[in-house]
Image 1 (spheres, rainbow, N blue to C red):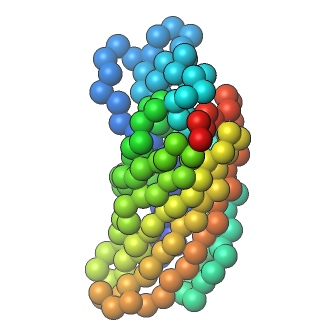
Image 2: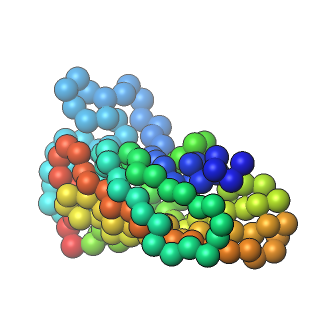
Image 3: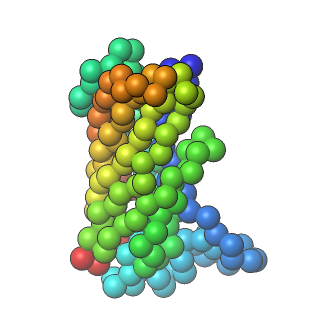
Length: 164
């Protein structure tokens, strides 16, 4: 169970929901990622896209924690301060600032027997992102241990727009 939770907890996929009708225009960006003009507007924050992500365990006082590098996908509407992160059916909410700094609301995964509470913070640049995933583990509601994971994601496709 612990390895399953760790696999779920460390291949985080960033995704935002879209309610636009009609889908993407032919040859254009996905409907929920803003228009092509928005993506190039230097005044509108834009960080959507795929990011192959190098992952490393930087601090750990738990037993049996393993992490692996995986793809991270970000869906973000140009200019929006809100992010919705989704991974393995778990949804995380967060915010991003104009300078690319972002944070998520802590989210717990697991069961009452063992819960991993994940908090994610980091910063996007024009060519990727760096993030820290801080995890607090409880067993039967009693604090047990903690660990920290470093993420370095490299943007695939068009560069991000970070207005400042």
